Length: 296
Image 1 (cartoon, rainbow, N blue to C red):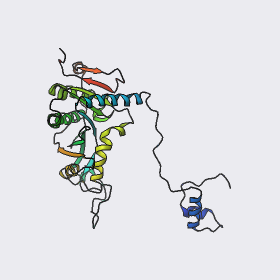
Image 2: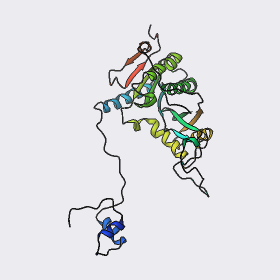
Image 3: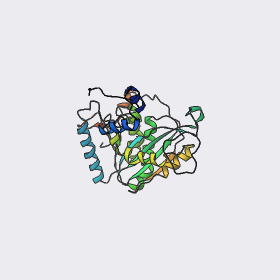
Image 4: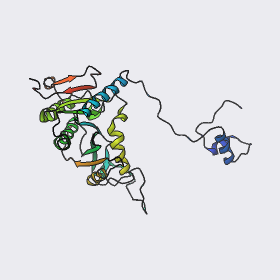
């Protein structure tokens, strides 16, 4: 037997290449399986070059998390879920029904009511998720406005005497670690407004799947509305509110009608007004914002 291997061939292709050797497809299939050949899909297992401080950052996040939990201070995980086109469009998944629902053959934007931008805030200590369903751009101002809304409502309900807040989030997008607007709005709309000491820890690039909100909240929402067309913003919010798990997860949703504009610029003068302290460990990912005038 030669070392030549068949790749990307159907059983009919192999049968044709055998030429005068007449072998049925079932026999070919059995021979392939006997040699451990199967129909296999690609698997994501090869990681690109990882940041040398990646593990150090995970340890620092765990340390900060433990400190806030022991002090009974709020600790949240935030991120933006995949944007969804709202309308009578295909939504992957299956549901029990007597007849399949009819949806548009193509996902044309002009046939939609708009694109939903679900920004989530997940409370790790109470296993509760809050999703703010926007309909414009996913900007730093949008992200911080949602965190501020959570602080003004649910934080006061569950942590009425809190003085600190920890935020775990990704390294890019509207809550990017290098975003000036993200830091500036956190200073004004969260730290200054509520008098909170805000500690932010970003997950390194390529490590966002370890952000708790991804596998504790967003994955469960996807299961809830799997196979259900997201025809309206109200219906989308309804599916989010219906999300629950046997471990006690509950979720609420709010529709956000405010329009956000991209491309906001924060000048050096504005940045100089921030009362921000970068951590000694991985300062590019970790920092604490104090209310202006704190300690004076």
